[in-house]
Image 1 (spheres, helix red, strand yellow):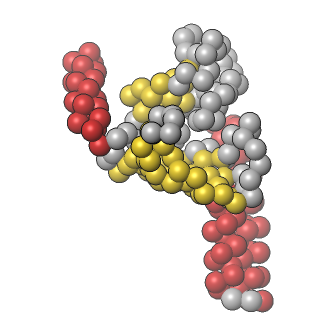
Image 2: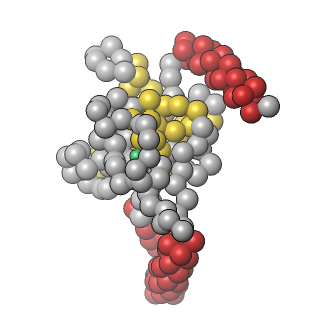
Image 3: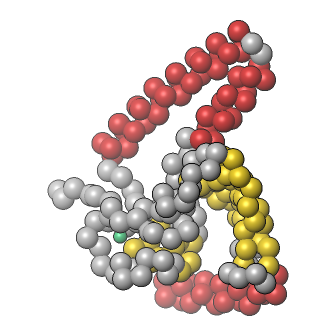
Amino acid sequence: MRRRRQCTTWSCSAVDVQCQRLARHDGPHGASPTSTYERHWSWSDGDPDAIEVLPGTVWFHPPDRARHAKTARRLGEWTALGLFAALLWWADSWATAFVFLALEMLLSVRRARFVDLGRFTAGVWRVTKVAPPVIFGVAFVLHGEGRNAKKAGIEIILGPVVVGAFSLMPRSEWPAYKRSQAAFDAQQKERRS
Ligand SMILES: [Zn+2]
């Protein structure tokens, strides 16, 4: 059996993600922020900064052995964290333990995670490697570039992690987007049947 390996290419743009396709795949690279996310980013080697958001999930499924090793490691980490939190609770207060756990979970985010609420999305992701290091920062997320760009939302930078909430597109573009999305879904359904 051939070993399944993940493509090692990373995107070099504002969305810092590893390609979620198999190694030596054909065509552009792609990655969804989670295994169930219904869209994915797509980019090519020629121009990694030109990222497109396309429908469909692109998510690498690691082989079982790698997954089991990862689960064991996670379990070990959680046990250690749990013990430390219990110690904090006992020595100080439940609030200290809670803050410790919350910060620990936030700062250990490796992959971007997003929750979609219609036109809006909220999520947490890691700071890009090219970004200047910031310990704490607050920034606006804009639609497009330039001084006249509309504000889309806000992001808070906490060391290596960014927490943000913003709208995916201006309200004026949303109906057109929904229509094209519906058309695409219908087309996919037709192709499948
Ligand atoms: Zn790739």
